[in-house]
Image (tube, rainbow, N blue to C red; front, side, top):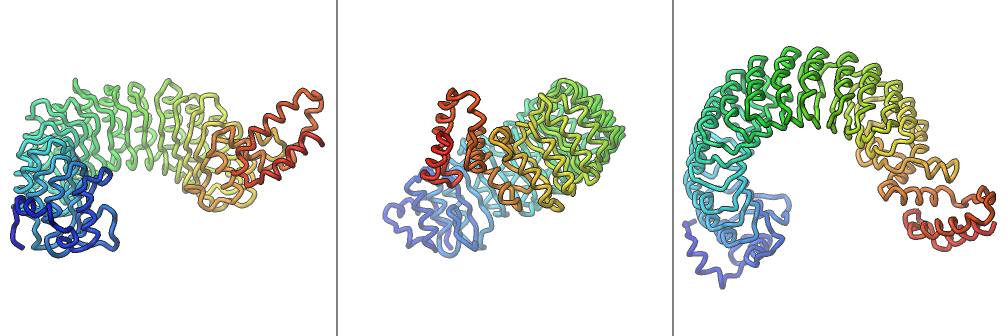
Length: 572
């Protein structure tokens, strides 16, 4: 197809029928919304095939779909997000990109295919002139060396970019060397993602050199997880990061070649004068007890740290004890320690940290071979923690009813503000269900208690039913739990119908839940105990019944039945 410039479409746009210039009615509808500046049509996905036509999906087939799309995108003042996915060969991509160059509204551009050298050059005006562009993403295709050079040439233009993402693009050292050189002209970027690639030592050296040489870099978030970075690569990277005094988030997860020597370099970053790191992800980096000990010197000097992920490593009790000593000086709010190897000894030291004044809101301890003794040691500390909102103990198969019963001390503590408890992958059966339900009596903070319900029979579910709605008396029902909205499976899937019904009531306001449960469980309210006060309590009964009347729809009770209930309560 012949290359058409922007003026070609401009001259024909006024009188053209959109159905005549597109390959489908769906594409014509999209162009109509762009032409009419539809205020809610703010994103487009461009692809070459689709099993079904999504509202925002422009499927390029034959003809000049792409050229006309470029023209109307260029004129749009509403479009904010554009995703370029797979494109057919030999189409008018250049014309589309020339039209795109006139756009000034798009904030995010996501490119999921190699558009070729000439097309990258055609993108230059768009990058240079669109002051609203904040996020440029390349993902889900192989960036070879030539493509990396094309991208580097594009990034050599000054822009308004704030976020640059190269996730899952098979980016290697050679490619990053090319791209990193262009980052010198983008000091304003505050978020850089290079995760899920093949970046190693040489790539880190190139990136480190660039960051070290940039004056006042704005980088706040660096995600370079799931690569092949080794100790020397990390050392070179740290040399550049020390110059980034705005850095608040660093993700190095999945770089299993990093050892104690690399962690020692990282520790120097934490101790540097201007380090203000708030989030650190070292998930799956093969940290053992020695590595944990190396980190402690730096962590102890990092009071700004609020989120630390050390999951999926080889940290044992000794390493945990060392970490606890350094975290005393931090303001950790989220601590991820899943899939390590802690016994009661390590958990006792962790509990001692939480006995101090702490801001910890989320603690993840899944898959740690924790047993009942470990739970008891942990409870000794968290019972005094007044900030913990999420606790994950999933896949600790040795936890039994005994350990779950020990949690009751925490649940009933005045300090308890726990909202979510995860116990996935623990087959605790009826005994565990009874222990858990009994422990939750009187707790008013938990909203989610999730676990696998296999092995739980009617005996276990009866305990939860009594927790949610004790039907022994109206007063017992009133004092039941009205805060839990999820028990067992995700969204209560697989729960008995009575449990589902009570949890549905709990999603209403606390007082409303109590009213609905009383209406549902006590068709004939016994008011004889009130006779001791003769008629003094009659106005209270009348007022409560009037207050309950608007909630009849929640319990499927007719107005006539309710009126009979009122008469029965007042005159029997």
